[in-house]
Image (tube, rainbow, N blue to C red; front, side, top):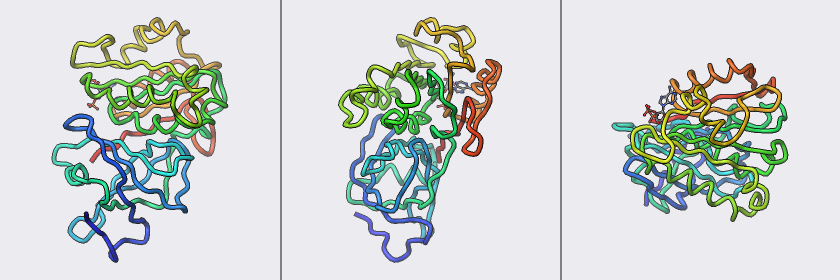
Amino acid sequence: MTSIGLDVPKNVTCEQVLDVRHWTDALFSFRLSRPASFRFRSGEFVMLGLMVDGRPLLRAYSVASPAWDDGLDFYSIIAPNGPLTSRLQRISPGDEVLLGKKPTGTLVLDALTPAKRLYLFSTGTGVAPFASLLREPETYEKFDEVVLTHTCRAVADLAYSEMLVDGLKDDPLVGDTAPGAVRYYATVTREEYARTGRITDLIVNRKLFDDLDLPALDREHDRVMICGSAAMLADTKALVEAAGLVEGSNAQPGDFVIERAFAG
Ligand code: A2P
């Protein structure tokens, strides 16, 4: 057990690690205690990290649990030579982690105008903010149907989102509504799998819509959130804009919002 103690900077609190789960050699998730003062909206991110050589080393992490949960879940890649994640991967229950006091972000329901259907396009650890939103009751008050797409290089990298979607039926708040509203569309790009290909290609060739028996994206019925690498964001955003959707923000709600999946 490590104790950070007196050196904690003013912009963070020191939280207990409650649980850690390793999904693959490069992917793990963990749960932290949540201070009573910590308020956030489902889908937001926060700075998180460790003291390294007497200084805080912090990176942005999406909260992967909903705003009503009394703990805070996070999902992380272990970046090769990543200054933070190479250390963070070794945490265990009882250790302490630094948590920023000011969550923020654009992947929030407030940034979208209402519509029939919500698409959540994610790659890799970009699924984390959607883990929060899928367990948020307001998601189902605002949208009749929610399509989660998750694309990873390998089949094993899908384990986290499979668990997430499978667990919705047992969720205390959305257990009745989510299973009937959520469509899960998992694809893999570097191994054999039931569905293969980048989500961008599956939008262009319409396979995503054909497989789910849905019409092509349109501004009247569809809203979109996108979370992945910088390249994935740029390519997916271009397709969503080509379909006529307009980017929204906290200040001006619109048809779609994007956020980078952080790693480091
Ligand atoms: P690919 O294997 O074809 O690169 P990464 O781990 O590099 O972030 O990738 C996670 C997933 O996102 C991979 O399946 C990868 O496919 C896919 N991906 C990477 N770049 C893009 C992009 N520009 N548009 C859509 N999907 C992408």
